[in-house]
Length: 404
Image (cartoon, rainbow, N blue to C red):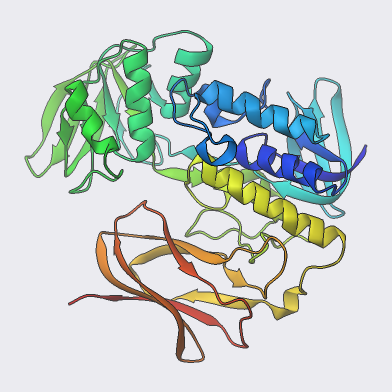
């Protein structure tokens, strides 16, 4: 099989790119989705708000996913569900498996938009027994909104990121009453007003606390908490593991793509080009994690970069300058390579910090500060810094000067 542009992943980034590629007439687009229905994570969310940036109205997750799908199909995209990409090869060429068996898809360009996933219990190093009832937010939302099931009644929620409050809303819709929210750090990570929701619902938040062990044989019966108040037991019938996202980059890594261990996503330049020629990346694959609207916007931006690539209008990679991080407080920053101006270029550096920090963020080249801004940042919150349109010669250095 052949297509002009192949997109791996039918979430907000992939569908946003497909719709925009159709609108600007970039060629035939084929979207590959491993699930039965396109739409990505929002399809599992029964709550709002989605859609303000994209459709200028507030809607629920299912409606939003359907609108994204309709926009991609209206642009002429073919969406192949129940189909999994098993390998990326030069060409670009994709190895796939689906209802009709295994086959190969050749494309002039490929956009990888496989998104992100929450860290597992093993990755969080939580000990204890292995009973049923320990699930991430995505599984909860799939069970509640797609299968109409209630996996538990009185769970503990681990995490206070924005998705943690999405999980809390899903619990409320299903008649589930969490016994507590657990946060390892001294502050709730999500911005207000999300942090007010547990108070409204009568769910206590335990700060500076972690789950050391999970107990139960067939089902969860309780957890051991550790923290400033020492070890203690808490009865519950489930554990919701929320946040602590990691990029869904296994396919890319297995195919030889270069991964940034800090962001957990691919190393990209300002146009989203990865290390493999003809391949681009967008959305939450780049880094964990942004909103559906931000991922949709990145997909739309990537569409213009791919369109320019197909017309041989992107600046040569040899003009890229490397971005170096010179601060232990900066967890990651991207794009990792800065390119000159062109269609679909990232106009800002996106970064996260490792801890709460106040100070000045600085971007330097050849010892000269070329961009700066004051920051009062928390971990897991989006921080951006403007990029110059036409970078000079020499590596960029990103630093954070903390306030006294």
